[in-house]
Length: 82
Image (cartoon, rainbow, N blue to C red; front, side, top):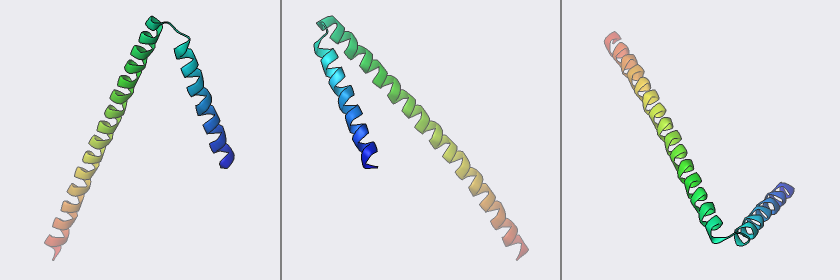
């Protein structure tokens, strides 16, 4: 566990270092393009996450409705048999 955390930390550090080095080695126009591309990627990720969450919530609502109907039907059957 400790070794995997170490490797994750080293990998993250290498990625951050490479990104910083790449950023400083580019021209202003390239920096603007990188920032623009990054903004687009973040927006796309946000939309994907929001869609997944909404789909999950819709599925939960559907399941809850089915469970409530079944519970009501069971209650009515028990109530009518008394």
